[in-house]
Length: 310
Picture 1 (cartoon, rainbow, N blue to C red):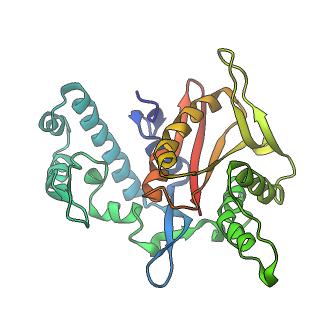
Picture 2 (cartoon, rainbow, N blue to C red):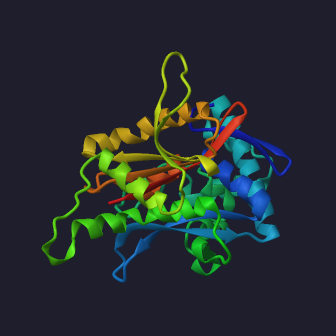
């Protein structure tokens, strides 16, 4: 099992070596009958404005059943592919003919074409198992099915309060940079500036925000945690993307950091706020999707949610 895979029990099944994002979706479906997703925000011209909104997607019982069945079929495929290294053998290992057919028919089975015209091999991706209606639902194509999380009614839980505060940072940065009446701008130029601003927005909600706490020592070393809200088990890590080279390495830095948080037992929710003023991260949605989800090691687990602002 790679560092980016976890194994969990849900719906009476053991899902082995699945991506953290998938694990989180299965857990949420089992407990709430819904999943959560972050979709990009666009202006009236269709341009991405650099922020994301979080939505709750309620599933029908039939959709829950289909989603779980698709995961089980995908697991059969993945296990056979790991064992044989052969796509045809992996497809034949799928027990239900419906999913075998979906996989081989999806995007011309290995000849998917990007908007640029480039052909990409996407054989066996999870989207090929769920069918077009489910794919549209979970990928943002059916807006009438989505509930904006802050508008669900009642008092938002502590995690959502923290998340909304972190989402306000890009707007705060712009306001501080473009101050009225010729006043001196407050520049955000490094990781310490990001930490200062993040602490400020969180402290308006939580009185027990702690700066620079340390994980327990393991093999003589410990990691400094940027921000902790002890009362609710929230940990926040801040990053500042310096240049294009740093953008290429930051995901690996975070994966290493994630492992160290298992030594900090109070951590139940990890938020990562990445300030990327130069837009060096080429595909923010894919970047976040690859890192988001449940991280589990032995008997400790926490959920990761990455946000990118500019």
